[in-house]
Length: 341
Image (cartoon, rainbow, N blue to C red; front, side):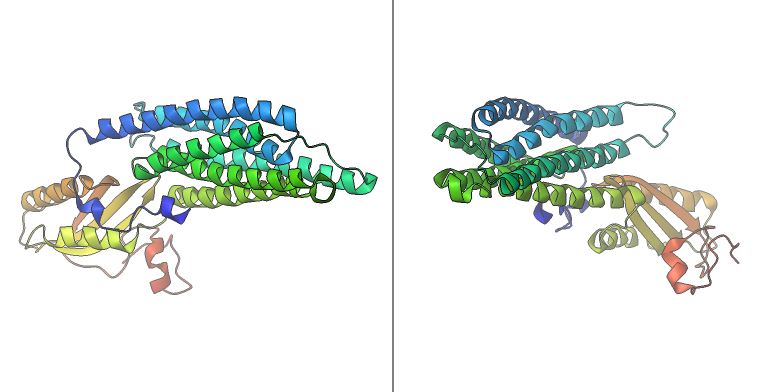
């Protein structure tokens, strides 16, 4: 699902958002969340009915996925709503809650998949040890249920994927719907093979449940690692930094860009710029140019906050007590706590 998570293939972030863009993003997120929740509740009900009648472990894996979809989606929605709530105790906002909700959902998904693996594995061991064949009764209605789920989830995936850059919430929903398309397709194939020759191919159905669960674990762990990178503060892509650099260089003829740092702070970016003005520039002149640059950078898509530090000369040593971006340039014995200068 790299196609879902990759939001930086172009320099679209240089387009400043139009008025009302926040309201549009909120509306899109609410619509995607509502449609996904309704779909998950409906699919859970019909899959539960299908599992009770068939006993298929592949259908069980798909059922567990739908059940956890509902729980994780509630977590994501609560985090999204809390992130929008203004609280003076959080001076830079709570947008990181969306990222936290994604990680929690990934953990829930992975744990539920582990449970399905345990149930399916126990059935395989029991069948081998006793020499019996697990009961499996699959009719065309089961394939109809799973086929309908595939079509519905595919449509929701395409919708959420087209709006994946709106927020972490929509991105996670797109990932979830894609996983459901894969898992339901695999469930149909495994159930069809087992039902054709139950005496010899009974093992295909529980094995299909295990394989579906392993894929679910892999995809959600992969997504969780990306979200962890965002919370930790992974650097923005080079294309983004180069775009900010070009914007800053064209801002004022007397100003020279010294250092640019852009890094994740949740889904959005924090941008730090260190700029140099001639010593003869007054404080008032430098301040006004720097504030104007800050506003221009903060108007870019994906930028949550920008900080512009003004200096009158370039400096080789880092100006912060801890500056991990320069430690590799200063040698293995660099002490990040040591004073500069």
